[in-house]
Image 1 (cartoon, rainbow, N blue to C red):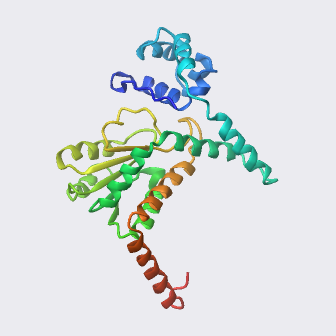
Image 2: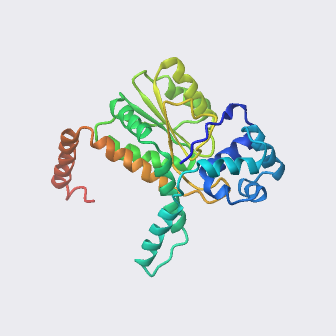
Length: 278
């Protein structure tokens, strides 16, 4: 995997979109034309042509030449083999299978072990964990809240939006962690949470589908989860995969204590199975 250390602060929103597409689809870009890139990102060909100079290349040809000498071995063959194996196991065909495998593979490629472990440590050691999950990410926050609460983690989903979010923010402490789901873009509320952290000192974790973004350096940890291109159907398979792995890793931090809690849960269920059947 090649990580382009491009300064997005000086880029226009259109250039950030192009940069993000190239970062996530480098192998495919090398086989594309500027017109195909423009169509994929939904920008003009002129915008793509101007982009190369913005990142230090004379033109697209110069970019290709540089990348062809430095690009790592393509992972495409690996996940294509996996797709073939899965498809042979069943007579059923699901049109989202290839996309799902690609999203999972891309997520595993772009989430560094260091960033993942740092997120686990912050979440495990936090006094309280707040989850800001607008729109379709609400389900991810609910899953995270439900599972992590079993490990004696104090969890809270931020329900308010707009200026009402200040009612939650006054409770943020230095020892807290705020998890922000920022798919496609960060909402104004998320930007306020990140800015407020500079004063209070609480930690922030962003879970996003943007490899390159202008907010990457604003949080303590940024974790990538692939959901597809901006103009395509956005899958939640990879984000769910990432959240589940966070939950498992957090549960493994204090195994004995967590196992005791789960055993207590089982005992309570058995005791009241007739009153409250599952």
